Every structure is written in structure tokens, then in C-alpha cells.
Length: 91
Image (cartoon, rainbow, N blue to C red; front, side):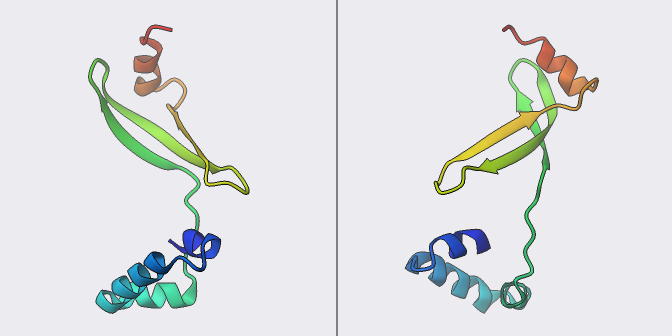
């Protein structure tokens, strides 16, 4: 939300959302005032594929500067069970 607020400072709905969260959560209000935000470089996600079953994948979101575009990459740890399962997919 902090990044969106910096990118769209005149966005009224975002401001209202921040105010609503702050009214209900003293922890959120304090974090928002202190700018206590850090980007998360990589997230680990568990997905259920209909044929391969559970996959543990790393998810990275890359922002395209000057646009609203995002590139989302999912990768499996090399040599791990999820990588082996993905290798079974037809190319």
C-alpha cells in the first residue's frame, strides 16, 4: 500500500482505505506513520497443480518502471521435488 500511495498520491480511495485500517489497528497506524515497510524480494508459495500435486515455488514480482506492469516469476528450487515434478510437464 505504501508503494501504491507513493505512486498515486491523489488516489482518494487508497487514502480512505489507509484511514480505515489505521482506525481499526493501532499497529497498522504506527507502522504507517513510521514508514515501516520493506519490500519482500521472494515469497515461497505452495500451489496445488491438478496433475502434479503440491508444488513449493518461489515467487518474485518485478515491477516495470514507469508503468503499472508487473512480471511474476515462479521458480522451483533446482534439484528439489517441485523441480522434478515440473520437469514432467510436456513442453
